[in-house]
Image (cartoon, rainbow, N blue to C red; front, side, top):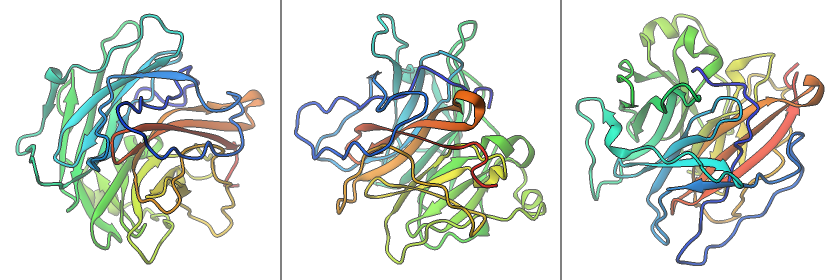
Length: 320
């Protein structure tokens, strides 16, 4: 991906909760070392289905320095709904992606009434002042079937979910691993219990032959894992740079070590007892003052399509 490890002014916003009252999440605790608290930006064009649990994931683009950014909300029938994110005081914000410019791999189908799609990821994107907005990514259904999609670019290559790792029942979420994707061409999928598997857009047998150790997810005995996102970078091992989202809105790091003691991110939505969080996507990350802290900002989508910011920081050597 061309746009990563960027400190951007694009952090996040709460999507407009229009038309109905919603149980609002806790604001969380702690603070981002770059921003003083919850990001204060605007979001444009996002879908919202009050009272209808149909949103399943959010696919985001990590933008260039200082740039507005964009993404899509995936619904369970297979629709991708574009939105953009900009500074709250931006009088000429980036507009949402034009749906007419989306294209999908052959065989992909929108299935009204059949709630089968669970995850959407971007693997490459861009939006700098000298280039048009573009993206490539994948949509994944619950059975692990993947289809490429693109916006203003050619389609990405074929990809599939491998049986390397444990995916016990039904894919609930996915994330790319940008720091190793160019080498291994992979990301993770998660099932409802928090167990991880791998997906790849190069030959999966070759990927598995690298003897990659798949991290452990936060395993639950019940069906509560709902999504994944790339996490704050940890220099010790980029294979651990992912988080699992539970249905109540909490993000949990995947881990390669019993010594992994990363604290939770500082702020974000949380609905204890209500299984309503559906997906997560990273929007910006980078280094704080003195490069001794790494920060991250992202979006969590609820089942009604509402977009909620999360944010936080860790020491830059957080696994060492």
